[in-house]
Image (tube, rainbow, N blue to C red; front, side, top):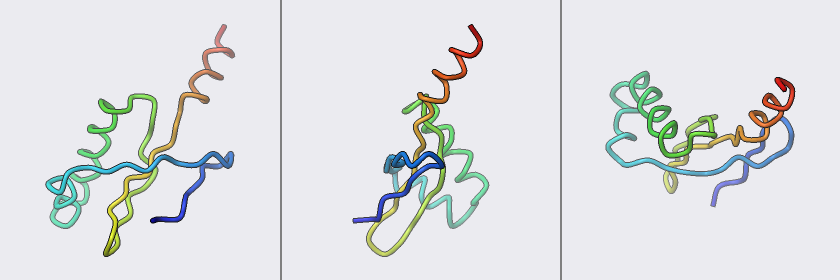
Amino acid sequence: MAEPRYDEFGVPLMQSGVSDAIWELRKTDPAAFKVRVREYFAVAYPSFTVEAATVNEREKIIWLKDERRTLLAKRRNDL
């Protein structure tokens, strides 16, 4: 199991993943991989942003940051 990662406020990042077809893009076209992963999570988790992708022998992980707290603070300040 991967060690947890944290955002700048000490909140743990969420671990997720994508299909092997998307991971293959990382090898052949890294720019397309980044675009495809961001598009995927924009639909799957609209209030989360992609922070990083890690690959090792056992795990392929996409690290997501929960932006709901930031979005709520912005809405409160805009009122």
